[in-house]
Image (cartoon, rainbow, N blue to C red; front, side):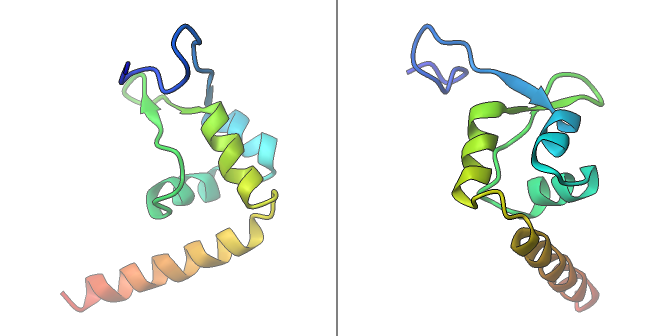
Length: 92
């Protein structure tokens, strides 16, 4: 199995930047970044330069399709996870 290509052999996966992901699903860049950091189910970004990261389109689309495009519960859970992380850091 080709580790770099998560798709079927001979098919090149499509990668999109974070601006396109955020615009496509109606979320802010900040929410997208939090999702990528906090949610273990969110597809991993691929760093292509010092500042530029891209996401595998098929995996991102599947992620949002599984949630039927409803990101409000995701945003709420991100706020809860961020608050829990802040409390845990304060207790260390």
